[in-house]
Every structure is written in structure tokens, then in C-alpha cells.
Image (tube, rainbow, N blue to C red; front, side, top):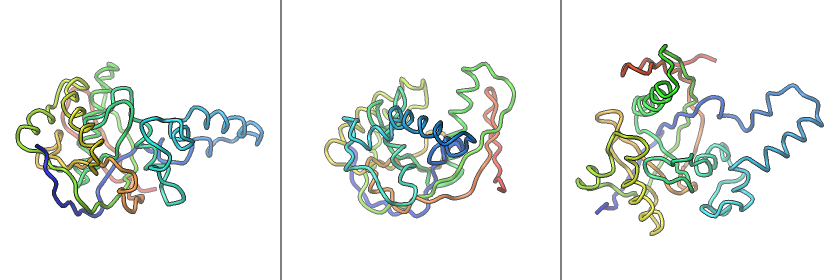
Length: 229
């Protein structure tokens, strides 16, 4: 059974597409003030993060979310935009904060999903995707998988079907008070990932550098570079 252990790591890496790394895309629109106001009201009514912050998400209460601290909206978004199938250690009701201990691990993790997207979209050329690196610190007791749980929960494919056992384990741990899980990266040999279940435990979230990740559907090679902006 997953066991508790100390995890103390500064500057873990979560890569977020630059399009989602601002408070709102409305900030960049050159429109009349009344139009922006109407769009802002619509955004507030439909944005999953803002709905959850008003108490509209049964899976995560407003009291768990962050307010009035730098990058609170980035952290809250991770927990309130779980995706239609969830992730490896979260289901479609509640998100989580995933990060790599190493930058290279985070790059390989996002590259896998972009290759999958290109394949499903039948796009054959190499395409570059831009990401903002969000750093965060963790210190405390987290769960670590035992050997049998690694075999069951860290299957590489098929996605999302292979998430079944890991989501079941994560839900069991979440609702018994776990802070999260530290586990070997599925997409980068030797890499380490963390999934944090509690917004308040994402310490000192801050912006790092911008990175470009170049991938193609049928090629496991990943090219990345730092963007100067």
C-alpha cells in the first residue's frame, strides 16, 4: 500500500500553455469597455475556475482554493479544470497540480500529450508549442507508491483507459486526507513527478522562463528551447 514519506523539493516545474498563463484572454482584447464588461460577465458565468470560487463545484469548496496571493488563479485553475477524462491521478470531477522535479521531465510529459493530439488530429508536420514554466515548492508528507501500485498505476497506454487504477487509488487517498503522490515519470525514464491534491500545499507558485517544445506525431524526439521575451 502507498506509504507516507517526506518530500522536500524547491522549484518543481509545471508547464502551462502560454495561452492559459494569463488572468484572462479578455485582457488582450481591444474592445469598447461595455463590450469587455459583457464578455467578463459571460466568462464569470461559464469559467470553471470562477464557478468553483463562487461555490459551484461540489468536488472542491471555495475554502480550499487560493485568494489574494500571486498566481492564485493559476493554482486554482489546475484544480477546477480537470478535463473530460481527468488525469492519471485525478478524475473528471476535480483537478490536481502536476509537476516535474526536473524541467526535462515536464517537457517530456507535455510533449507526449501534444504528440497524441497531433496524431488524433492527423497533423503530420512538426509543430512548436509555447509554455510558461510555473515553479512551486513542496515540503511535507506525501504518499509514495509501492511496487504493485507502480505496476498498476503507471501504465503508459492506452490513454485515458490506463488511468482507471490510478484514479481509483488517488480518490481513496484524497478522501482520507492525503496531500498527494510522488511517483516516477511515465514519459521520462529516471524522472520524478508529483501530483498535489491540495491547493494550499502548492507553496510559492511563481513564473519561471518560457519554453518552446517542438514535436511531431510520429516521432518520439523532442526539441525544446528557452524563449527570450
